[in-house]
Length: 574
Image (tube, rainbow, N blue to C red; front, side, top):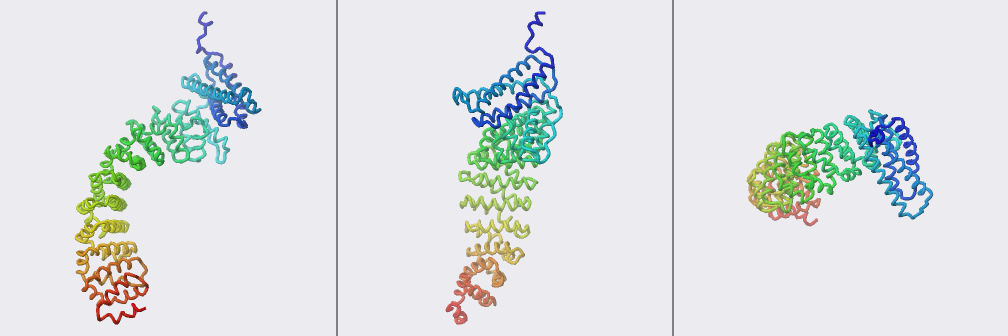
């Protein structure tokens, strides 16, 4: 009997009493929420209170007919008192009655907001303990296209409530429904991140769920929200970076969850401010490990490379990446079988090597790796490698670096690609060797020794206009070296072909480079005689008449020969 008189705090009460009390409380909260929309004083504080009231209403409305509990009744009574306080404050704000002053009213609003936080936490505990259960085990239907903003907001709030307080299966269904909504309309992402209290934070928490399925769906949702620039800040504020990295680190994480996590980090780090957060949470070693392992999917490696590319934009992090063995990892990627991995490896190698403070050994190691790609890479990878070699040498145009390029076997490989590579690769080769030759006489001489001149002359007549122009420019640069001039004129057909291509009727930049080459070649008396006897002198005359400066220079040199002086006097008197 004494035990019945001293009823413990968790005793079960009559179910109808709790249900009727809860319904009365809902009837009180709903009009209170509506009244807060029109309040003018302290709008931001009322917005926060309104969100909490809506969440409270959602929790109470979702509860099923569970056996009542004395602790629950105490909580409901406490919520009723807090709702009454909020209603009184709302009335004062509506009348703009500041009895006791604005500071006191502001303080009272903060107190009510804190009480609502406590009530929400207690309700979540009751759901977790099974004292409260959800009335509906199914997820409500998504509003149709064109639905009102209020309907969409109610739908998202209902899903978030189920994600917070439901069991594993209900959470899974709610997350699935939420993901479908996020893919359908960006408005749902905006509502989730900006209009639902702790909406994004709830997803971030579930990234560390013990259920792999829940982890996957939570990662999918975070990835969807990260697609929108305007909502990335909400993810970072909710602390998404650390659990995303932990998903990548954990051996038990499913591959899909890892892919989603890496994609989300890739999007988040497009803002360089977030790169530091990834590095601070140990992201660099984790991402490098993903790129070096063969067990990861191409999608996962691609996303991880994307994150590392963003991180390398911060100089301090880039140097840390090199310290952690990034160069070895990127060299391995550049030599991978898949084209996407090759291209990303090349791009990342270039990023870490093009640093003023980077060591010569690192640069030379990267250069050797890029040269090897020219043997085994796909056409796109070869094109990327050629551009990377060109940019790397341009970033550090030291004599030692260019000498290392020559002895690396680059020129022999480049020549092979000129002879049998795709047009896009040929263009990349010509652009690279032309620029590299412009940096060093040693490179130009080595190109002549390697046999570039005959191949460049052949390319002057291929179908691709761009290849012809680039071949002409490269040839003009090489001829500035005396030894290369001797090689060029030694083969008689070379000069005749060059003169034949000076047809004034053809409009291209090729002639400009070819005439520039002739200016140098006509320093030789034997070359001037051969030009005069070639039958193509009229091409030069017509170009000179159209004010092509280099053509006039060539004509002037030719006119020094006595037998042509009288013939060409008219041009110079005009």
